Image 1 (tube, rainbow, N blue to C red):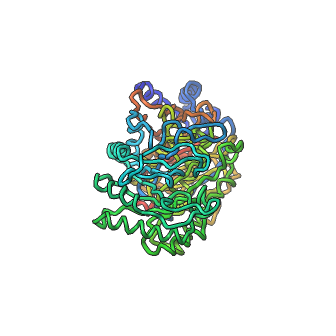
Image 2 (image 1 turned 90 degrees about the vertical axis):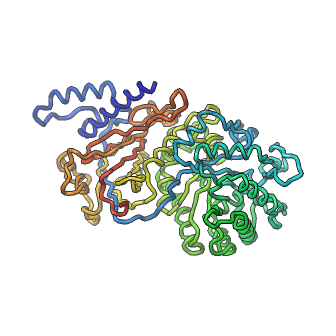
Image 3 (image 1 turned 60 degrees about the horizontal axis):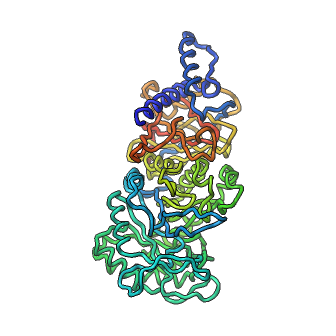
Length: 578
């Protein structure tokens, strides 16, 4: 199977490269034949198109677009481990809309020995995993307690319809065995309601009882388990989800938790980060938390993003493909950045949970190709506002898992996350686009190598784009090219090579392209194609090799309708990335 996939991918690579060398072939695999001695070459290319043309090739005339990358300065930076995924507490009985999609995927019952699980985590080289969710504020830790360690059970008058649950230390030991084996970086969400009481409706009052958390952190340290960060509470901020706590009270308890970490982690350099509050952003509440807790206490302000609606929303796909709807989330990232600048410059911004669709995710949406358009757009958008970490709900569990809850096979978003992790570095660059709003573009320094990586997303399901790439070093931004006038292929090349460098030969310069599309053009397919080839695990659960196609750097990038492309430019002149 591996050998067959390799030959298929090689054939696809040759086809895509040929099509990029001859942009007119993207559409009908035909050219005018105006150049001499082209008859044989055209015949060969036509045969290639007939037998192996990529499914993302458009049948309509593409529109022209330009993306100008400003490589002189960074506008923001992410953490080196920006990609993060969550594992939640929800038991199998968690149901919404007559669906119960969690199965055996929670922190308490996930099959930690499943052969696909470890390999899926290891592929990221130190994947950040956040353990938490709605029920974390009802979890007791079975260390230093006298009560029996019982699982969650349905309870009509319990928070979110469940009783208090328990994490046994034998289970904690097994979880850490997996994390150490795979090199995962752990964030653990602590119970911030322990000791408090419900006053009325969703309001909780009283002082937080820190004894159970203290014993749990102490146990974790005694076993040598490396926890990179501890998050205090889940969705208790602002109006809360199920329960809410006053910001001043919360801030005082965060101070106490910080003192516990400083006391138990003796060496200052070994102290993990303290994150809070892991809720939905409320500017006044978040500002009050920073002011109450004071300088240096909260290392990262964490917030959650579910901007698409509930899992029963019939308009999810329309929302994902609507640039105006997607852009609404930008206000939250911008306001979070401003809040930190005004009230807590010592803290950074994290998205510690984001599933897009709340209440388990959207079936046949969150686990299909269409969701990668939302997911990658959010990753790009959040990074522009100095968001350091972006945690996806979930690694596994619900309808929004990167891995299928039943089979552990990767859903399309898994491969999207993996490509981001491998290609997009932590330096975020500014860009100018001369294109319709349905063409989305984000630029980063290349991951741990010279050059840059560009992420292109096409929200249009009918129109493809020929995207000319430019560097602002040699382009006047005040002078907009007239894209209505069709230029010859030679003229387009001259514009495109403005950023190559005067001494370089375009014949020897290549770029890497990774085109992501849905199998058979079905946006709700669970199979994602990379450069026309299905992404599938090997028989042993190994993640497939995700090779790019190499394309002449001086040709426009063709972006098919409702497709995604990562474009790596190894020789792009970006001083900010040096």
